[in-house]
Length: 262
Image 1 (cartoon, rainbow, N blue to C red):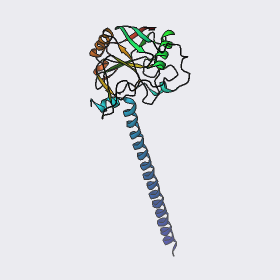
Image 2: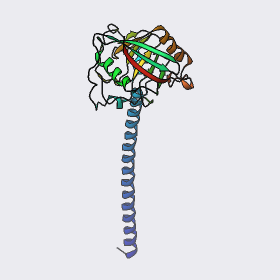
Image 3: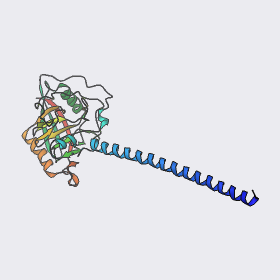
Image 4: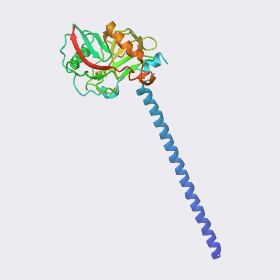
């Protein structure tokens, strides 16, 4: 083989090696791209799932789906139990009244300690130390469910007392229908929770119009007529920005709260 033929052969072999390396590089790039695309798809699905669970719009059609998605639900931080329940100091055979002085009028509701002793005891203990004073009712829902949610010292849906209250009185509103819900009548006051059993803290909701929800929220109080009308006015004013779930347009500041034996 002449020297020129050898050079051409070597050049061809070099070119073939370069092409082989380039093809292997392209294959690696395609594999990496496929892996990244798959990962992005998984993240997107998880993100949508998280939005559906946490976005709540519960707080999200107008019957079962609306009730299931538009639930009065604080963020998970409230469910992290770090402190013990307050020592039991109430009379379990008595009735108590929780009175809220707010920027939209007085709101009061009766509480039955015999049926919800842990809940009533906790609310009295918190009220006695001014826990609810100068807080806001941070959430109003006007589509699917009709509630005003209060009791969060942070005002953003993540606040709580650092302990959890066990569910109580869950059969008070009857057996769930085929759609898995019961009717919470106007005037009902019930505990918000994270969707998990026994995850209530300090947040509660005031029902101002008949609402269907699962029987998983402790109903512990009933508003009087004047109080219900005050909450109805807040509901009629709607949500900031015109949405069906969010901060009430008619802001509700809770100035003072007290719990007294009736």
